[in-house]
Length: 424
Ligand SMILES: Cc1cc2nc3c(=O)[nH]c(=O)nc-3n(C[C@H](O)[C@H](O)[C@H](O)COP(=O)(O)OP(=O)(O)OC[C@H]3O[C@@H](n4cnc5c(N)ncnc54)[C@H](O)[C@@H]3O)c2cc1C
Image 1 (cartoon, rainbow, N blue to C red):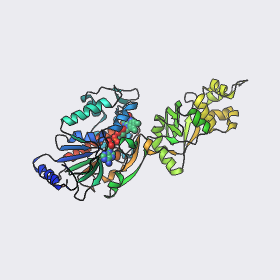
Image 2 (cartoon, rainbow, N blue to C red; image 1 turned 45 degrees about the vertical axis):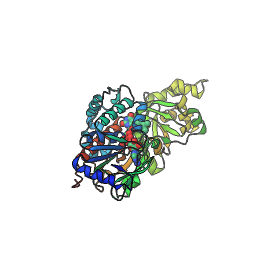
Image 3 (spheres, rainbow, N blue to C red; image 1 turned 60 degrees about the vertical axis):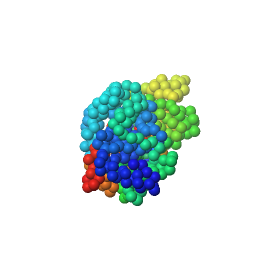
Image 4 (tube, rainbow, N blue to C red; image 1 turned 90 degrees about the horizontal axis):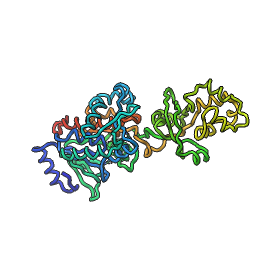
């Protein structure tokens, strides 16, 4: 079925074999979305999974490095609300593979899970590698054929899929295809967004890929960047627009990163893209109200240095004190009431989102209205799309992998009933 561009005898064998045997399905991209599609198609079609990298699921494995958060156990309506404006389109697909079903699926692969105190669901081993190993073995046993080191480059004039391989260009004729190529974050793991022009050339609207769940640049002073890079800022409240949340973040050489920042990052990114900056408001003492803080800071300082006074009266020192010095005019420190107000609502100006290559995930991608309800591209019949390459975004918390698995299965289900003869 794989042929060199000149070798059309192989393509003919492929076509005639099709009449007697199962249809041939090509899945391009071996991340969670592509593998979920392969799983759904196995047994129904001859399934071939192609990936540009020497091994599959590299981003999935990386996701497991910091504790694989595979789904979330919260109330379903809340879960669905995380997909914001994409909810309406994604809901039927997410309902096709609900968080509970994801948990049963992982259990069936022999992976024990636990629900963390926040409702996030993790494998007990925390890693992705045991799950991926069993999953790939099961897929192989179900007849799925893997083709690593096959970088998809588009379509030949006769409609065959074209790939770059270490042995040169090869063509592959499929009755149906699923693209599950990921976004453009962490491109060295395989997903680099090079597919965007290939689909645009076919008239498909692909919205620009943008960083999601990302850090931000801040114009730190050289002292702040050198002295405090890597320092966690713990248990603060971050507010932007009408959203506030309590959590931790990390000061980096260039700005800020971390889970609480990621949770607000879509709005912060949109605002900084639009206005050239976004002002995040920090409450450095969420457990002490303004009245008490003002009283505490108004206590006579005696001979204590300002740093000692801040530490003793308000519990602020280290990186939190440094943030105050970075963001406030020196005169504020002489006025306890103004200082208390600033500690409760410290404005931190973010300049821009960090580059997409550093982001956890991508926003943008194939416009959802380019797809029918089975996730087939209406402009390219027989080609389905799934996973992060579609234009939706969600915070961290297991929502990303959940939606990749659900859309992968949905695309696989659509491909399984696609009739290449009649185009429906
Ligand atoms: C550090 C980090 C931590 C994360 N942690 C979590 C987490 O805990 N929970 C969570 O839900 N999500 C997490 N994510 C996000 C999650 O890993 C992704 O959303 C998910 O892997 C996307 O799945 P996908 O199958 O759509 O794409 P990918 O996993 O990116 O897979 C796409 C595949 O397509 C292949 N490919 C791309 N272009 C081509 C081409 N032209 N030809 C052939 N193959 C190609 C790539 O090699 C890749 O294997 C994390 C991400 C990062 C970076």
